[in-house]
Length: 336
Image (cartoon, rainbow, N blue to C red; front, side, top):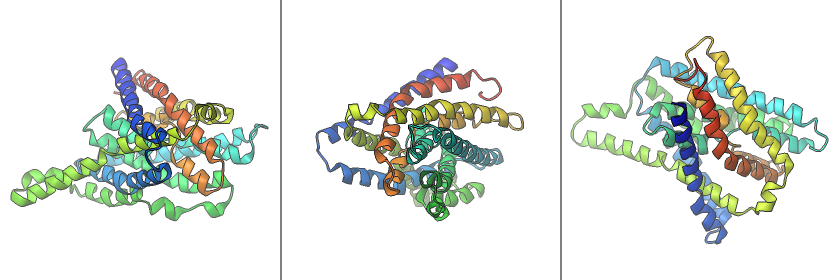
């Protein structure tokens, strides 16, 4: 079982990175305006694809109280693990004489926040196709991610309370779609009831379900195309010559998963974590989140360092993610 998951996860990560090649080629050949393309793809992912991922997962899952408990556990796990890495990382990195306070904030942010929305979701879609529950849990991680990123994350980056935005943490497409979809799930209003309908009503519900699935499946290709275009803008020498970026990468790809395992084992002492352990460890193992580049630019921080963290961690995650999931399969009591 362990070897099978290792191989499947290795193939899934590799396939995701392969889908970044078209964007890389297009960017290198200067076939498009990179800045405009990046903005368009970012808007598509945030405002269209991610909400459809949420609706597709919730509306294809029958209500189950155990799933609701799992959602709460995933939400709390994400908040605790990201907050711990964020503040712990900042405290330790800021002690390095070679790292100024601004860089320490970017390193801590990169180490704490993984690419939950744009890589973890498509990775899980490839790893376990048609498993809507696993994606449902992943959308909950995105909500928790946004909550911590827009509040504690911004505070660590700037060390100023005025940049904490609870409003932005809630009023964003992924979170709003989750807030809408959750009551529908709890009321058991979903696409599964279409089998009881006939005629035009059945066709309409089936059509809406197909549209949701179509846009949901676009997350992976669009996110990786975006990554490829960004990667094309950087020179290899510039990408790999900053030692500071490797601190964040080490925290995100090694320390964060280790903390994830520790928290999962702690949770296993009072609840059954086997239905959610793959989600929890996978989100812990994801590379640095793309949004650090956006926040670094908006808040006038070192966006180049942020980009290096994202690019290096994404490339190396092709190796680390399968290894971490292989370790998960060897952990009795938390994986089934």
